[in-house]
Image 1 (tube, rainbow, N blue to C red):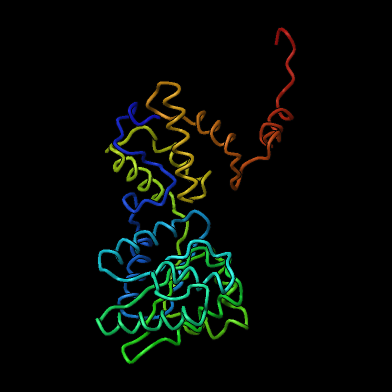
Image 2 (image 1 turned 120 degrees about the vertical axis):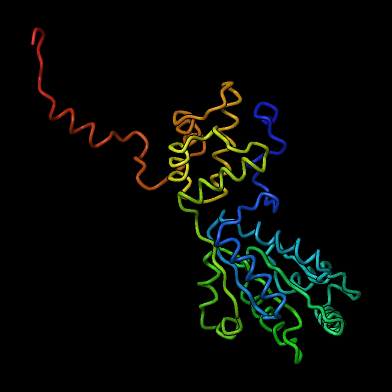
Length: 297
């Protein structure tokens, strides 16, 4: 809606996980490099964790682009609320296995055959599972057993588990200690700091078609960082709403008043924010300490 007003060639703060808008911070570069290294080196099990909205799915999309460019077979499971039967059925569909896809036994035979064929050609196969913290215990056990598929060159299938920090806590459970021992690489995405938030916003504005942006002044970006707590998804939502507000008010500079309104509409909560309706402690002290004046003083 506001693209023409600002001269954007693409929406800079789209919430979709678009690899073209990936902000390549040091931690994101490191995480992507570890994922690619783990696949190429046939490490077996890799875990990617991060709080909601820190960019895990975007990382996985970048990895998918890499796998496709290298003609590496992969299955991507995006709905993790499944049982073990559904788990094997989804693998069979994604890898286009020629078998009775509702039969776990047939899927395993067909999968093993595919993995051996890929290995003979010097290739590997990858299984990516997003939102892995939601996986049932029995599905996690089935995933562990897939790690038994190996030869002298390494694991025949590389498994990437991506999820919220709850995934780490789940993997610490005593009944999953065998799976935990097989995890060779771990990557974690943290919220952005103020400097990274500034670079993130400027980078997305530039990729959207506005280099050297001046819509968000430095002091406003500092406020955006505080209210978003450095979570990229929240930053996107705030900035998208601010751009829409600017468009509606026919101005090309966002203000803190606009940010206050957007924060209210989004029902944002952040450290140090006063509960709604609560007066400032300093305002109360000022009233108590102010001298009493009468007319004529």
